[in-house]
Length: 114
Length: 117
Image (tube, rainbow over all chains, first blue to last red; front, side, top):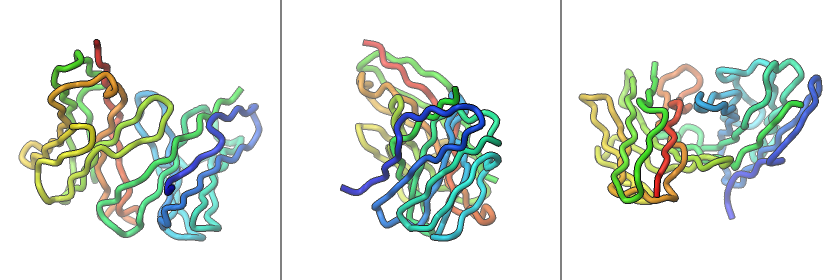
């Protein structure tokens, strides 16, 4: 059953802590993406990766970090430098270099800072 | 640069009546356009996509959208709303020749559709 999984579904963090959100895909896609969603703002791109061992900053990368050591995995770390991390985080994947770039989304992780 | 504007943040319809969700885009190139749907606390699901073939695009669950270049619009319609259509809908344009991020998606702010019984 192909798709994208994100874990955990809900995550609570104390201020000053780093947390890592997991994203795994078995679609054999080259490209993976992380988005942040806030009410009324649509989706904003945090980081993306078009190939293993390479990634690029998106529009709101400050306070976040990623790695892409395996094709199927693209974890996102929310660091203590992110001033307002409470949000819904969505991971997506697509076939890089193939247009149109239809992206497939995971179910999301809701992060709440206490 | 590409951009997309969803003209209504909220739309409310009665069950069985038509749905119209409006989207205008801006693009220097021939765009690829998408509509995605999101149910509460879920990921996004692709409804339909325009890729410069037919201007009238049919999607899942009875939705369709018409690409109108002269109006730079890509409005989403459905003849008869169902309670299960209540969700948030995103109009999306694919960035092209956008530096290193060719193919990245640019999202509208979303339209929340409510369906009254």
